[in-house]
Amino acid sequence: MDSFGGMDSSFSGLRQLLCPTVDVPCRLLLSGFQVARVIGKGGAFIKELRESSGAVINILDKQLPVAFMNRDERVVLVRGSLESIMIAVGGIIRLAFGASSPTSGHDVTVEEHQRAVEVMIPEVSCSHLIGEKGTRISSIMQETRCDLHVVREPVSGLSEQKRLRIMGPAVPDIELAVFKVQELMLDLTKFGVLSEAHFNLVDGPTAAVDLAPRDRGKGSGIAVHMLVGKDETAWIIGKRGSKISKLRDLARVSVNDADIPPFTQHEAVVEIAGAPLSELIHVLQLIVDDLMLKPGARDTTRLMLPTEHFAAIIGQGGEVIRRLGEETGATLSQQPAERHGSGLYRLRVLEVTGNDRQRIAAAKAAFEIVEEACIKAGTLERAAPVHAPPLFASSAESPPPTPSPSPSAAERAAAVGAAVARPSFAEAPPPPSAAEGFRAATVPPPSQQ
Image 1: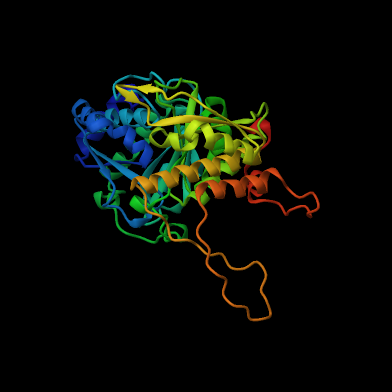
Image 2: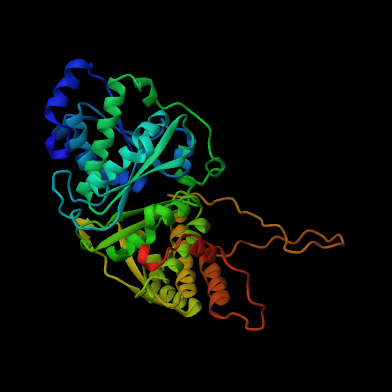
């Protein structure tokens, strides 16, 4: 217990003598991408974790309310003794952040840069975690070097549960913070403040943003991935998670260490999922626009596209990628497919260079082509078209327009490229964009980054 910064041994012995053993689970909130890392190929990693820790580890998916599916979120439920839970949780966190195996130590996760993990705790425990005038939570933050933030809104879809967001500079610090929180939950249960029923998952109110289906499953849009440097992750997350929290109002956004190999310990992956493609591109635009404000900002965005559909981006003889570059004004450079294990890594890097508008236009076109390829392969279903209302109402009755065939992905790309690359200078300046509003609301001065 000392390895996790446990309490004084004499007090711990007294506590165990006076209080009965209780079952207090640890519940981590992870994205679908992170859960896939935890499970491993053929379930190898999660099996290894169960055997090495002795804890019971379950991935809750279909058992959760629909709100979780809509935002591509899972609950990892860990049960057992405090020691076994923390061994398991340590492995889960390391895998979620990109470690090569559950027992690989801190091979890629010891490097210091801001990371975040969310733990679900009973709402009634929040005041005890904070303590009188914030003394307890401040003590934990000081001891672990982590920032602990209780999200004000309840967990959408569940009753009387809250998110505790833990942000820290290194994975061992985050593990220690999770341990201190789990230890407190155990003490509160032993002393009767909490009961085991407080940890049950009961359906509750669902936030409006999670009510509408977001085309998950077979009929879903695709996930957007971007490869970034570790120096960019803290900027994307923002102070106390302020920026990424606003992005998560639009889609499921996570920042994880990149897999090693094929990438390096200095790289991370931004995953945007859980929403239609148009919303994913909008979130990508907010991130790219915000990164442009960072000192030393780069003019290149590294997109990560499915290797199995990368050929659709290239086209025969490079025709498609060349046309995309011409139409969007961006310079597109394909990177070689990386080896991973016995095959190729599932994602391949496409470097896009240009101004922010050119890069977003190219990204939109590239992911639309991938989406079309997925539909042709049968892994996605074509979403029903959404008809926007007319911009200007007509006073006279007019006949309904003649339906026209849906444009292809290449045609849509051409339209986007033409609109972005050839603006009309006669037009009046546009009103502030959503991206500009996001930057104004979330970007602190450089000294606070």
